Length: 399
Image 1 (cartoon, rainbow, N blue to C red):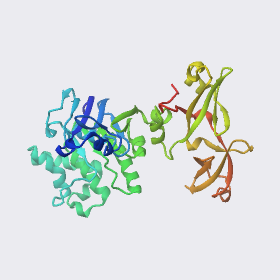
Image 2: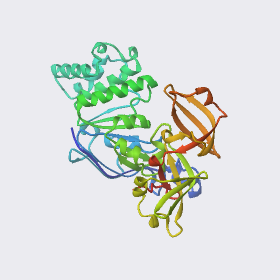
Image 3: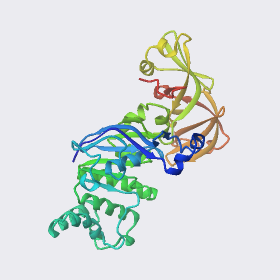
Image 4: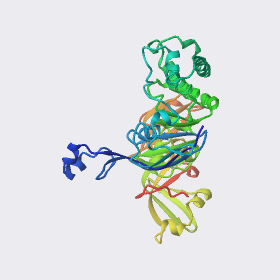
């Protein structure tokens, strides 16, 4: 068990000799994604700072190419740290070899030795550390019991299912009793049902193991269900750090708001936030919604927020569960384009004056036949759950 501290960590991939010969015009045209290019090379991780407490479960989440796996590999020692400092249990680890960092890592592809049995795979690292046969047997069987893979100890990886292989990969890491446990998208190769099962297993396992976990995923459902805290990344930068509930309820910017939540939040660009007679209101697609006291209080001083004109352009955000079908004939005009039946609820994908809007509506007491493509509806937005973002900076206006 250990505290992990990352201070201003940066990862720069230097240019190859061929890339150095290219002129700046060619470099800008071939710039990968939105990663920053400097004279030193491509910056994959930018000024990453994070304090991870002992026994905390932290999840790094973000789209492909955001730098989350690179950050994990720097902690593991599989990638050099270009700038900044890494501390594990109070010791600076920048120049310490991976084998001496007392960490264990589970990879996306399991990385099991195909010619070895499950027992031999789990025992291998202990043999390399010169543990006695008795100690090895004790550690392996304890880990196998925790992971419920004792009946598989004499099998080889080819005779195991994907979920069983992943448990063996975890067991191989657990037997070492590491200070820090690293997991790099361990469930991404599993089917949806097995992924859900393994997610629940990891939650149970975490309670038994009680060590520091750093987990990387692109799946925000995994992040929300597993992490004590979530670190949301984009283009090498940290966008927000917080508990699952904090990042869901109070997204710091437009990216976080759109990334966290399934289906994703509805956005209404070009909305107008107004302050008059001591009250806030927002105009969305031609309809005006008065904001409730709690939201108005969170926005702060109206004169400061809306300026002398009393108005500013914003992007309003409303989660699908807070989009309601109007029953009084008032609201935003919308037309259903796709109706997805999800059992106890239906996901309605609608067009409202050219803006895509998704609503989640319960199917109980609903005439499902009426909710088909082409049906015209009126929509209301639950303002108490509304989010407001600056149209230019995309930062949240809610304090």
